Image 1: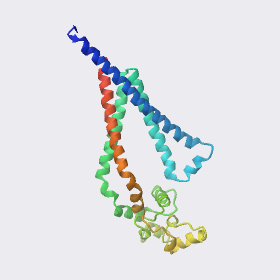
Image 2: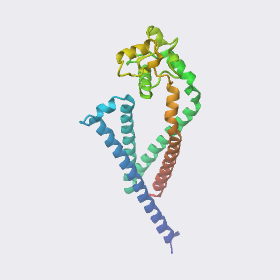
Image 3: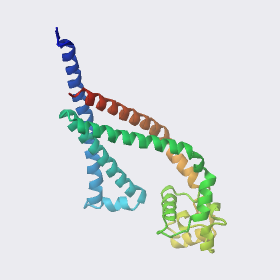
Image 4: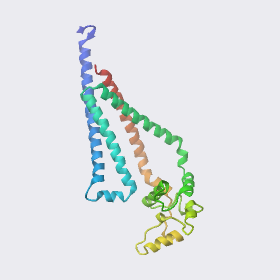
Length: 255
């Protein structure tokens, strides 16, 4: 049957497709909303937990920084899920458009980060890090971001320098600390010798030093995750593209 030049059957089919798309998008974004809520809850619990878990995490600055990353990701997913759910179920074109723009911004930011990482990959060489370490590392200066970051890396990975203890030869650290061969973070803690072992390590004894460089230690650590991270990044980009197409189709289908 044709009414006003428009097939009633076609109109019904279009309405059914729009309704199906609306509920599929609601379900899809509801899971995103739940994921964001869960991450927010975990991050908030770690920060305010009265049982002492916060202090355990705070011992390692990398873990403590991860808590804020979890909170940021949780907030972003919470907002995306909320906008997507409300926009779909209420058929609100403004919310759908905002959802689309937010996803597009995140997608472009991720794409830009990937391009920049590719363009500046030559700066991630062992020689580059060694040169920067010699020029800027100061030892126990916790107010210098570069120095404190390297202290965290060497403590976390039980390593010394970029390639090894020899990286501190003819360095700013040796200039500031002429009586020390390596910083304290390069030393293995020995419960029998205690502070005496640390002093020997810093002054001369290679027996108490971490001889492995941080470059090799970090490459080995992240090598197991690099392919999983790459696959996850592709999946995330595909989901974002899918969400943008879905949102725009629903936006255009709403009368």
